[in-house]
Image (cartoon, rainbow, N blue to C red):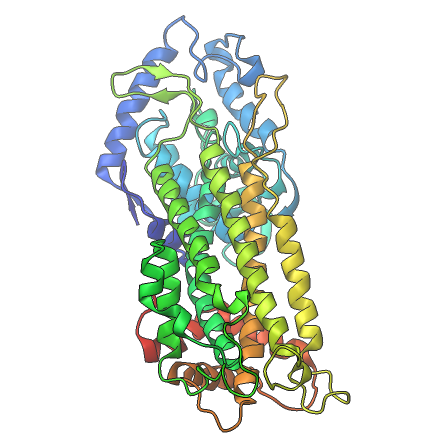
Length: 509
């Protein structure tokens, strides 16, 4: 992955964070780094105080720092700001955070020397992952504590995970890979800490995961409609054209593609005639579609943030070094919260369909709880409990973090975004949504198989065959259910559900 002064994409970030892609600095980036550093060095030689170059930080910015103390100043800001607590953050999050900070450093707007940027790349390429903790960022002045733990690694201090996942002192890891620690100079400590990189990295990964999950949820909604002998007439394109939300149309088209050729749809006028299906079935495209449109807005914000150079102060093309507020995480924090709300609603409607499949009074002929011998067997009764517990937690996680603010730094930083917190809870929400979709898939495939004498859609049959081959068991007497649910979760999580459908339908929208 060659990093220039601009042009880093979401797929680049995912490649480095999740696939371990190697990183190189372009000649253009090195030239920009060198030029910006020249400006900082010139300002550092002058007697006039410049924030971040020859002053203290935050509420201590009024003190002018002499040249003899500036190396100590940069070292101290990293050490003092590496104040995180709690569990370790996931390796992919830390790698995304490090790569995104390197992206901004290479923009030529931070004044960091080329050798510091190269060390950042070397640490990534060596598979060294700083230990970053769950708590410490307020999402303003950047993700200060998380980024400080990464900067501490560049200095040869603190702890990090090696490529083998074992946590060891950073000095040992750097020495083992032939990497020399850096001694930070004017502005460099501050430049390594002042960014929205953690919350942006988590946003980009959530967007990638939710893209797959929204398609998977369209599939499971179609399977539930089929198992409930519902009508696919509500998915007709002309109905969605008169309410032209693009996400809604895409979800309806996906469901229609999955249901093509089904022998189960259209039986809603049989033994117990009904004019229309319940909202959780009939309105599936409207709910999932609204979530898809929220994803589209979040991608727009993420792309803008990817194109940004977030630091304070920044080096401008005309040679000025100016203080600013671009580190405030509000734009990213808002969409992280929006996504958690949309994910909770998608999970909620999926759980309602699952409950309908299990209720003999609303399932149109399916056995109670899809049990083999109801009364002797409990079937999927408690699987739905598990799904309901996940949905309830997702509703709590949907409470916006960005609606809160807590003052810090002696009231200098008196309004913060809480974007890191929004990102952390979104990761949990996405994880839970995967499990909720998996449980609906598990219930719906069992229900379809219990519709004896009726032929499911070819895409549905492809899902059933692939799920059974993956160890997701079908109907039968009660058994230890947790392994089945775990297999269903893995089937959704790694994309096999979607892949099975798309062998029949082609790529879903």
